[in-house]
Length: 202
Length: 76
Image 1 (cartoon, rainbow over the protein chains, first blue to last red):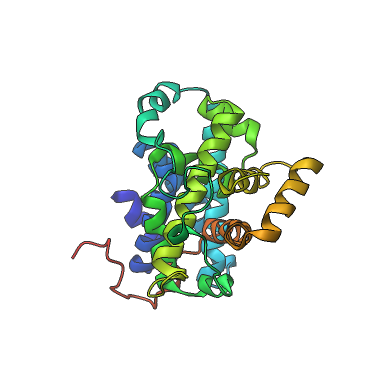
Image 2: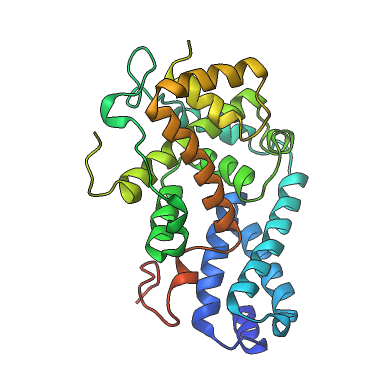
């Protein structure tokens, strides 16, 4: 708590903005590191680093981009240093993630009629909507933990396959299966709750 | 011919590695005839853009007006 107050008074002086930012960073870091203390450290370091040079930023959007860039680097460092610590974790959770996607495909592996991906129109309009990002975050939250972790390592931190496999202690084919499942789930969640919400698929 | 499940696997893996020539041909052949998988392929590209934007610090909080109370995770 003390350090938060320090940061607040240090430069930006808007507790609401900082609290929102901090909350978003914590969510991001915690999911990645699955350790609240490590996440707290990474977020704190990134915030302090960024706020030191805060007056160089024209606006909040630029500051936020910068803070997240620093945070991503800190998380990547921790992940690269950590090796195979989560092997046990992964085995324990394999039941949770072991479910197949028979609900999406029929016995021959073709889309069931009501699960067939629909056209999304212009999906890139969505990035301008606060409501969309809330749906996105909630879809991420609903992924099984290990799937969310590898998805975020790949797509947020932009680690390559060998780096992720080493950090998590899984094989390439494990990783491919987990990413495939995460993407199937996320896609479906976004379609049901945003892109096709209120429409019936044909 | 590949089924839709296999095609979605290839689409997913194409985000991590370059597909072989045969895989690419199989994918093309299937998506010519299958709207669902064609859409799925586009959605994978969109998903990557969304994720990268999110990691740049996009997200609900950024788009809210200052001091807004609509962040439901905030305690009263």
